[in-house]
Length: 159
Image 1 (spheres, one colour):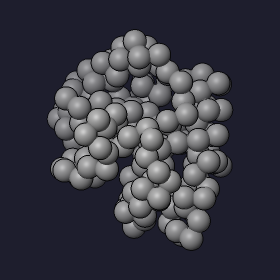
Image 2 (spheres, helix red, strand yellow; image 1 turned 60 degrees about the horizontal axis):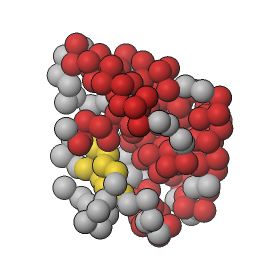
Image 3 (cartoon, one colour; image 1 turned 90 degrees about the vertical axis):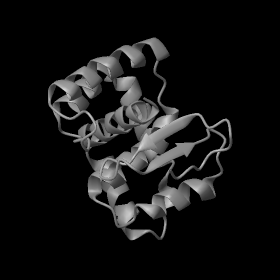
Image 4 (tube, one colour; image 1 turned 180 degrees about the vertical axis):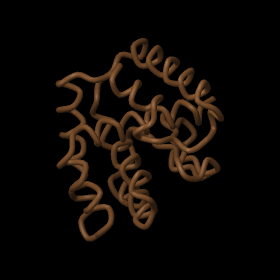
């Protein structure tokens, strides 16, 4: 397991393509560490890049823990009903799109966009990451689904 947090790490995300890779982050992490993680998926599949970027950008999205927990449980049930719950997550699959719909508000989308915009410095000079960020900023529905993918991956990794 790759760990980028201290002993009190608050977040965990599992790579969609490789369930053996787990990333932890601490809310107080320095920008260089975020850049290092973004660089680590520079040549990954676009869906992995999008989820990673939205994972970090999503730190600025305010969601009540009870609402998030209930939405995650519903998404996990949909994922399990669709077969192997540990298969790679599909940002356009039923579980992720249901989670995205459950949590969707205009305010949260604006918060995610602000978080994505704040990553511009972290992707400077990283062609693949810069292109992935440009795609996310140009398509708010894709960005929202990628954010939901990161939330579901984090929840599954904690289980």
